Length: 221
Image (cartoon, rainbow, N blue to C red; front, top):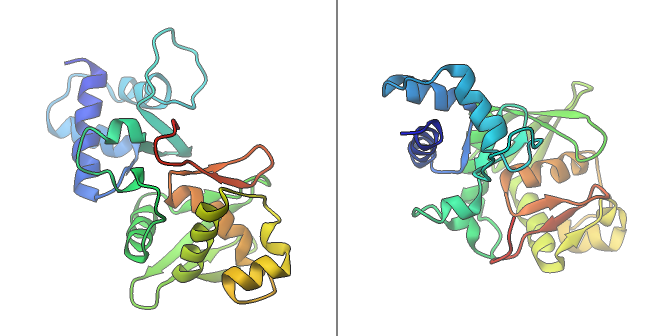
């Protein structure tokens, strides 16, 4: 088997076990070591980060669009590849459910809790995810911890899917904020919510103006 073949098999096993499409290169390396790969850690990392990554610089003549890098050290399988197996919940045109959002947030918390703002380079960190209260605690660079209700994430996604594209100042309009969240004020966790949405839902894409657009069913990533 080629290195790519072994990586694809490893990612299939890892994502099936986790129940989502996210993985880290270290998880792949650990898995391939367990099954007795002959490839070095460096070769595996180069394949994942360069040869098999759709949004990596094109330094190699032969390249495959198998994965997408969503932040440092965290990748996900592209929908095209996921369609080979049964894990196809994110190929539909419906927003994620409460349980799906919480599950993905918990997996992110275990693997790579840091994520960045859409355009300012600020770093946020997931602190906790509660299935009971439906709250996600996020630490800002200032050290302050804000809690985001999963219901607000669901409302956010519902509006994104309804409209198709949300500029970054969309909820600063009191009418939009009141209609979607029930409050006229777009408070501090709002920026973190914008940043968290594309990490949790691969159909959400960052626009050139630091807003979000949704990838519709049947559209290429």
